[in-house]
Length: 88
Figure 1: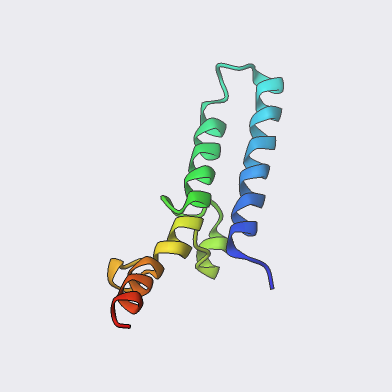
Figure 2: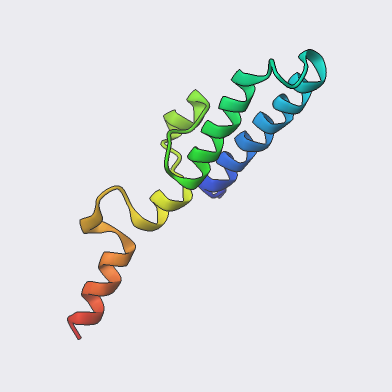
């Protein structure tokens, strides 16, 4: 089984590779779309944005922060740990 973050890191590496190729082909100033793609891929890895590819969106891949904290503060890992430690 592969972790969600591995899919997102692969997308980030591919976006970075595409940025480097675009810099070589068209120059540093004209690679704005590729920079935005790298930024969006980084946001997806951290859990602050949606995955870049449709395949990852269909799989509902979650970023690191979403995996740790969850989508709702009521059901996050941190909340569960705090509640369970106070109930003892």
